[in-house]
Amino acid sequence: MTFIEFNKTFSNEQDVINHFIKIRYNDKLKCNHCGSDRIYKYSSNQRSKLFRCGDCNKDFSIFKDTIFEKSRTDLIKWMYAIHLFLNSKKGISGYQLQREIGVTYKTAWRMLKQIRKAMNSNNKDHFNAIVEIDETYIGGKPRKENNHKKDDEDDNNNFPTNKRGRGTKKKAVVGIVDRENKKVFAKVTSKNKNGQKLSGIQLLEILNEVCKENNTVMTDEFKSYNILKNTNYIHLKIDHTKNYVDGDIHTNSVESFWAILKRGIYGIYHHVSLKYLQNYINEFCFRYNNRNQNMFDLILKQGVL
Image (cartoon, rainbow, N blue to C red; front, side, top):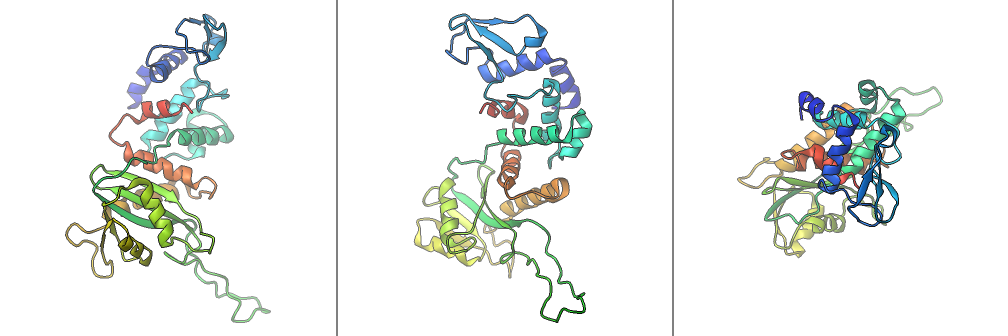
């Protein structure tokens, strides 16, 4: 949606209400309490979000049980925030949204959090035929060892380093891409009870969430993927020490998703807490999986919680 199209679609608050009724109720407004279609509208502009049921005689808001519930922010600002968020390929920061729509940072941060809540399409449909699986690590940049010491420090008291790749202290994320449908599923992983990251059992459990038996699975040479030998999956590996593509055997699709994800997190958000990391992963999965759809209306639809 362009800015011109946005202005034509949402010229006032009533336009937002009418559009949301179309999305949530398919243009057939029904009572949230009893499901009746005998609905009466309040004439007062101050109560434009409220309706009354002619059968159960109860009032209800069309924004009840949605990401917009209990928000005092203007509906036009909400729609414009979604528009800005989606039109920015790698997202938008809370401070930028604050400047764009004229709210406090706390309000802008909450709005973005609510919008991400509606971006819950971390695809769990079963993937078909050929999939690629790979892992990446999200967190601070690796630190070089600091060679400057105080006088009372000896040579063994160097500052700890944060390694690159496997063995790092950063959080591991596993991603799976369906080559045929161009869909991605990604999940933040935790250490198992033995303190291991990305064990074969962990990777297999994630793979089983979205893949059917007999799928062809493309991986790199990471030893934890050897567990696939004892399954019904067809396991093909690419040795990145020799080349990155061997005919149709490669993991380039999932690695290109990692590039988009990291540029968004490091370039726009800079820092993401572990508590909300999966929400940000879901955001980029949503953008990737629905890039050829009307994401604006899809967010409004999925915003009904």
